Length: 231
Ligand SMILES: Nc1ncnc2c1ncn2[C@@H]1O[C@H](COP(=O)(O)OP(=O)(O)O)[C@@H](O)[C@H]1O
Ligand SMILES: O=c1ccn([C@@H]2O[C@H](COP(=O)(O)OP(=O)(O)O)[C@@H](O)[C@H]2O)c(=O)[nH]1
Ligand SMILES: [Mg+2]
Image (cartoon, rainbow, N blue to C red; front, side):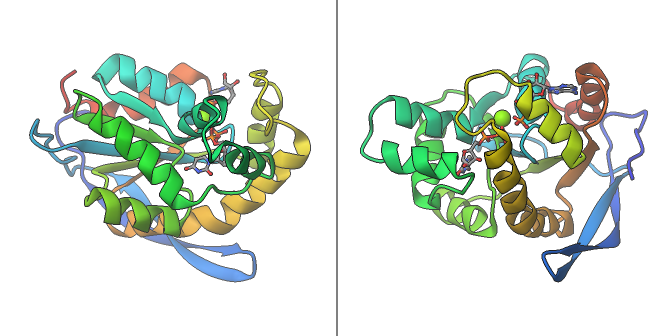
C-alpha cells in the first residue's frame, strides 16, 4: 500500500508483511508503505544506484525513459546490453541468445561485467539499472563485484495478464516476445524474483509501484520518490 506525500524532501517508510505462496514455498513479502523517510543523498564522489525491477512487460523501460528525462539518470538496461552483445558477434553471443530465447537468466558474471563496463565509461554518477538483478545470485554477484548496494529499488507490480498483453503488443521484433517464452519468463520471474524483492524490502529500500494505468499516471507515482534529487 502506498501513500503519496506532499513534501517531496521527506519520504519515510514502514513495512507490513504479507505472505505469498511461490512454487510451494512461502515467502514473507514486506510491503513498504511510503511515509516520510528520505532517500539517500547522492554525492558526486560515489555512484547513486537505482535498481528497476518488475516482470516482463511491467513497464520498466518505459518508466526509465521518463526518469532519465526528469532526473538526469543514465539508463542501463541489462537486457539491452545482452542484446547488444549478441548483435556485436561476441564470443558469448550464441549462449546469450539461446538463454534469452528460453526465457532463462544469463550467468551473472557476464551481465555484471557488462553493467560494470557501462558504469565505468559513464561521466554520470546516477544510474538506473533496469531489469537486474533477476535473482539472488545476480544480486550477490553485483554487490561483490561492484562493491556496493543500490540506494533505491523500484518494483513495478503488474498483473500477469496485463504483462502478457503488453509484451505481445510490444512489436520490437524480440526473440522472446512470444507466448511460449513469456510463459517461461513469468515462471522464472515468480521463482527467482521474489527473494530479491523481499531482500530489498527488508532493507527498507523497496518502492513498490502499482504498474496499472497510463504511462503518465504511473510516472506520477514514481516522481515523488526522486523529487529530492536535482537533475
Ligand atoms: N502503462 C502502460 N500502459 C500500457 N502499455 C504500456 C505501459 N507502459 C508500457 N507499456 C507498453 O508495454 C510494452 C512493455 O513495456 P516496457 O517498458 O518495454 O516493459 P518492460 O521493460 O518492463 O518489459 C511496451 O510496448 C510499452 O510501450
Ligand atoms: O539481468 C538480466 C537481464 C536480462 N536477462 C535476459 O534478457 C531477457 C530480456 O530482458 P529484458 O530486461 O530486456 O526484458 P523485459 O523484462 O524488459 O521485457 C530476460 O528474459 C533474460 O533472458 C538476463 O538474463 N539477465
Ligand atoms: Mg525492458
